[in-house]
Amino acid sequence: MLDDTGFVKDGKDSPGVKRQYSGTLGKIGNCQIGVSLHAVASKGTVPLGWALYLPEEWCADLPRRKKAKIPEDVEFKTKPQLGVDLAVRAAGWKIRKAPVLGDCAYGDNTELRDRLHSEGLQYVLSVSPETTVFTADTRFIAPEPGTGPGRRNNHPRPDRDPEQIGQLIARLGEGQLRTVAFRDGPNGKPMRSRFMFVRVRAAHHWRAHDGRGRWGKTEEIPPREEWLIAEWPKGQEKPTDYRISNLPATTTQTRLARLARLRWKIELDYKQLKGELGLDHYEGRSWLGWYHHTALVTAAYGFLTLERLLPP
Image 1 (tube, one colour):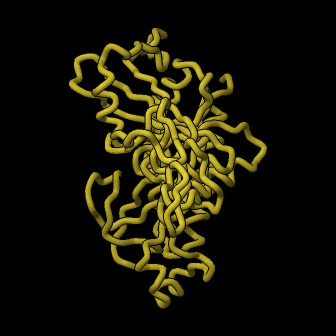
Image 2 (cartoon, helix red, strand yellow):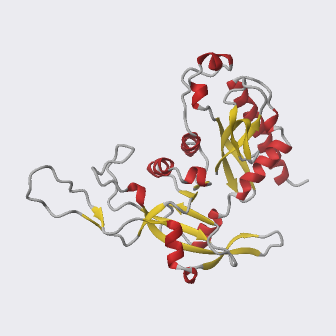
Image 3 (cartoon, helix red, strand yellow):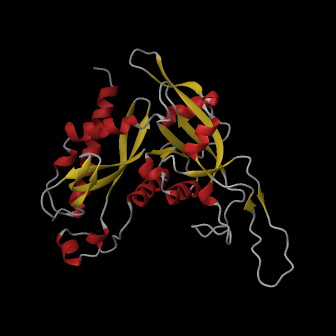
């Protein structure tokens, strides 16, 4: 599970600090932003890694970098780039692989989705309703050979325009919704909501010019099929969330719904890491010190999680 959290700061010397939006504050404030990856299991969760976001202005300020002891090889990376690096690194460890989850800040980033897929990692990521897709029955047809002068583009073209997922779900209507249990409630009874599961092809994969992708590989033609998961609770005028997933076509609706609704656990993680273990209490001014602090807090959190699972 990928997300980021803010660390409120005074002054301008803490590495990466600036006035920027923080979900912790719910507004723009003077803070650091830390990106984290968390393992989620049925009996507990634990962070797998942290990355301190370093804004571009920090990367270009050599005296400031030197004062904060930021290594010379650290370059600017966006939050999604930091997040996908954490996921790829963790995938190489001796832990069970699981789909990567994240909100729109990560799901709307097509490069992140492409890299996860190219690394053989599955994902279930929230996306904005403006995200465009092709319906699964879209045909990609090569143009007829031409006889005129000049070089012709023989790249296959779709037989229809892509469609925003918000418009697609609205067009399909509530008749295709299914009520699915997405987790067990506190009283042991399953919690349910209405979902729509549609096979689509991501529109950003299609390149009309030369068929080359961002990663230097030939694009799939047609683009790969994915799941579009829309949650449309009863009584709502429109869906409350949309998600894109590259899980196999044989994945059950129950598994898709459970994964789609699992992100709430990361908010609980942040609350406990800060409220019980002082994740946001680090007052040092060094780059490495921030990583030492997050590592120690993570170790303490893992220890407490194991203690809770043991009998008295």
